Every structure is written in C-alpha cells, then in structure tokens.
Length: 107
Image (tube, rainbow, N blue to C red; front, side, top):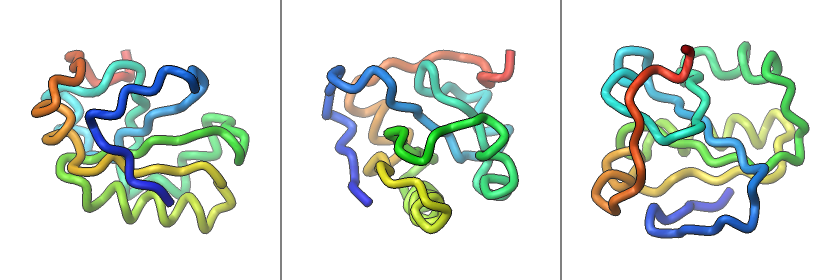
C-alpha cells in the first residue's frame, strides 16, 4: 500500500477512484471532488456494490489519515491491488490547497 502525498498532482491516471471513508456527518463538511462516500464501518459490505475492478487505482482518505490506512489494508486483503492512502487525510488535503466541494457525494 502506498501513501499518497496531498501535494502530489498526477493526472496521468484519470480512472483513479477516490473513496472517502469518513462518517456521513463528516462528508457534509466538504469532500474531495469526485470522491465516493463509503464510511469505514460499512466498507467491506459496500465496496463491491459499486462494481470496481480489483485492479482499479484507489485513493482512500479520511479526516486525518488513520482510518484510511486501515481501510486501504482492508481493501488489499479483499484483493484490490492498486490502493493508496492519502497521507494526512482531508486535513492535509485542505492545507495543501486541494480542491474541496460541498455536499455528501450522494446527490
């Protein structure tokens, strides 16, 4: 599992899927655009329902970087092969000036 630095701006992988593993109330405080909200507590039972190929590049984030590491490890155990955790989570993303959108992502 890799740790993606929030200052890393690589657009060479447009098919990367970003998963927000924060809890539902946290999603309303802002999220990374195009991220899919799947709270860590329901990840195992939910991720297959979105139909991802096990080789899809995934970037996982939470508020501070801890839950996303656990989620990334879980996804690897489930057979996903290209998983990264966003180092420092949403906090680091904001501090690095990354784009943030409002809404839950479930609109």
